[in-house]
Image (cartoon, rainbow, N blue to C red; front, top):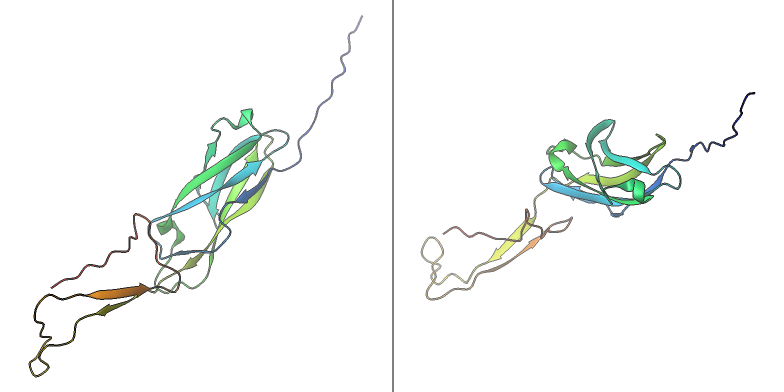
Length: 173
């Protein structure tokens, strides 16, 4: 006698969903690290990986949290993008799109707009206020006594206070 078994098979054809944590433009001069992050979710097979692309070039794989996404269908992803990979030069003017590609274990994938990077190739404007010249009849700037120097810095796209771009002014005398 023959034995037949009936089984059902669910085929996952639904791509994962995802979003980025950073919604605004990122300004970069092409150096340093750009921190990217977001969340991905898959209701069926679970998340396999999230890769990062600049144009059609894959530049890396994001870290997933939890590190074992099969135990959770929703994951946080993070990636530290080396800004030199953006190819920004002093003549760069076009925005650069960085994509995160979320792939589930059934090989369905979906693109997530991870960041729009705007080239910032103009340095900040710095103004230094020095004391009044004590003797304008002599060449150079004559100062008597203790002096106070003040100044300000302004940048069209903001000044950064991270470890790599600290607000530090060095005076050489």
